[in-house]
Length: 124
Image (cartoon, rainbow, N blue to C red; front, side):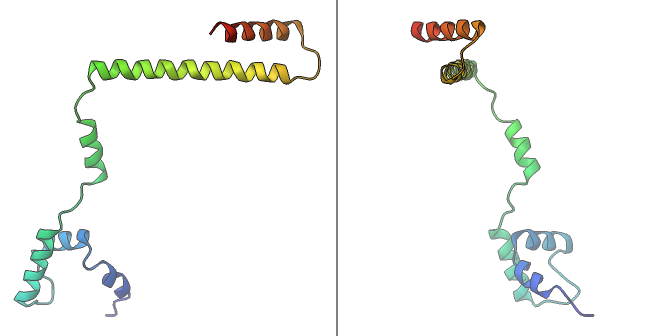
């Protein structure tokens, strides 16, 4: 039997994932008998390489983290309100800029909106 994936085996044979799963499933033995020195090397590799936490376990751990305090929640709420106010101001400013940049004459509604936006900007 010809093994076609030798290049992949050479690359992955000492990879943490495959070393750990190989030794867990087969108890460190394979179809071919290994010498005692080979088995000791694999055991040393497994002890020094702990598998990293998986994606699902990391997500579960993140969900189980400590609850948010009331102070932090109020702070987040205040920050959000401040962000919304800034966005509203920027939106009004953009509308005023577009009204001021218009070359053709403004309609009555546009003039009223422009005057209201200018008054709001002057008052704040």
